[in-house]
Image (cartoon, rainbow, N blue to C red; front, side, top):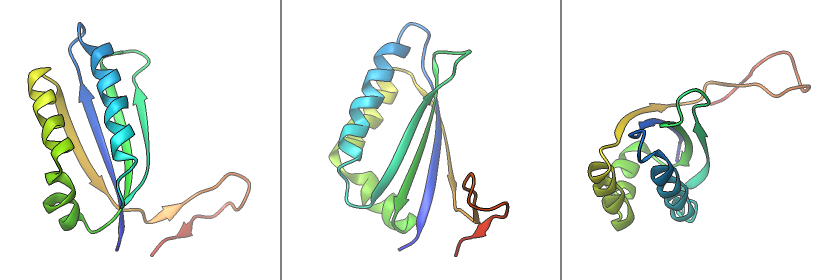
Length: 112
């Protein structure tokens, strides 16, 4: 299997961003229990509280993720919540090619 990173920008409405923030946190309580899930970080824009960035790492083939993981009941419920709350979603999928760690080296360690 191959790791990939999913970065998703969500934009809520000014009047529902706190509700969405809680829903996002609740979602990742479930996501974090998934077999191929590695880790995630959820960010909130300091200047625009209704804007969120989710950074997820998965250890699975992207096709499996799209055709199996995203068909789970909790994902279908999440999709409906996004529609109901009128959340704008902008997903992107990335694959690592270099990694940097503070203090270990001044050079990138190339990943395969």
